[in-house]
Length: 116
Length: 111
Image (cartoon, rainbow over all chains, first blue to last red; front, side):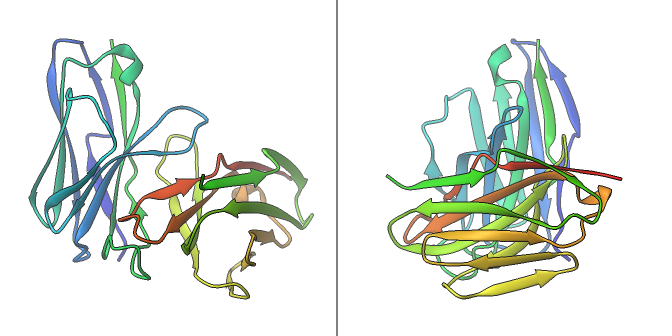
């Protein structure tokens, strides 16, 4: 089973709202990722968690706050977003994140976020 | 600078018309090359991982190959359900999981 689940599927929020995106995997993977994808563009890496610790933050604005409560769960907390943050937010996981042969990333279905 | 280029940007085929998609890369220390399929509004679906030049992998109508400079995704006798955007991504050594994506090839297969 190579399933990564994400909730919600769709989210509409105002610029003053606080919301959270959730991601879950039960493959025993120790690395989890958040990506942002705009229309007709490839995914852009936002954050990498390895063994529940943040290992990469690609200069993402502080209005995006990641959290990894345990090895199976990954959250992305959203606050004071801008309309240009509207995008498809993708979660992925891999067995490891060390640049080795176990790094195939499996993606979830994504959360379509619209910021009004 | 590490770079991944996919061509063509868009490809229209008739059902049964075989073709190939190209992914060329210039990176320092390739650790793996990945092919994904993405349908509109959905997450990328993993297809193949290739690690070394000369490696080939097949799945149904798809076959992926890898050389030292590029990878090809061959589609044999495509069907309309193969229509999607195909993404190529590479991982370089020591990158802690950072994938460098190409811009994708949008494939349309007409019946």
